[in-house]
Length: 437
Image (cartoon, rainbow, N blue to C red; front, side, top):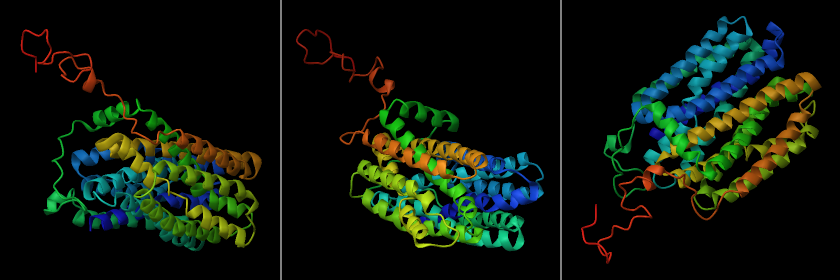
């Protein structure tokens, strides 16, 4: 039941974030705003979506998942609703960029990682894949409906639907979400004994920053952060934001382009769940190398596949790219758990921040490229090159052992008996006094 509620929340979160790409043409026609101006709101949304995640994970530990998620959904509802009153670009940035970005970021990947880590000991990769696939399924639900609403009734009708949906999803969260299996007298799925009681955590900001400080000492953190930033740049930042206007530039109707983006979501559901299954059985580093290589290959080909009508080549891209869309998440989460243990949800939140910063940068840069060059070709080719960089970063990860960050308080404390330089053992031949404990 808790997994089903989490799935519903993530479905809605993805749908809320996908709406701005549907409104670009309508906002340009009504207000005269450029693609770069409208994209700036999307960039702020994507950046805050990521930067909120690590703090949201700590907030869930401190105040509970249910309270944080309900507040996030209501923030989305208010932010999207206020868009109806906007007249200036900064109001779009405030409403859809800041408020919707903060709300959706509080239900980002850290939420799925927290739920999976608390409720499942076995099949964690598979469940992570299922919850991650909810993002693609959200696009599948919202994009065709949103495109139809924008075309038939104007962009304001789509905004109203998002606002009402945000409030509606909060109801099952409030009624059905529980914090931990112990609240219902259950064990985590696959567990044979109860996990230890969670430690009482300190301040949210302090803990999030402390986890970042410790993780930043690890080589694995920076390699994962770099590759995951490229993941965001080549999915949500570029394809998620600009695929519809790019297809429209080649004469494809907005509703058809939105349906293709939703179809990517269909195959992403399949690919991400399969990726979770593979993650439980295969080396996560190898999976990431394969995923990024295939994604880069597909993006290199995309500029030649656009046409004014629905043709087999663009359908082939949709299927191929869709299977790979967020298949990177389950192996990235698995590597995060392997290297950072109980801090994995917060560390993954920081990785997601890097993911969304990459997405935000490319969302804005692609809009500028479109305004300057008249097409998106440079953006597609640049994304393909970035995927090759991600392959190299993943190959640099150590496959043999975790690269845990150094923790000075574990090895350098003067009172530790396991310090490598200590010789106060009771069996030392020159000792005339008992060893200090």
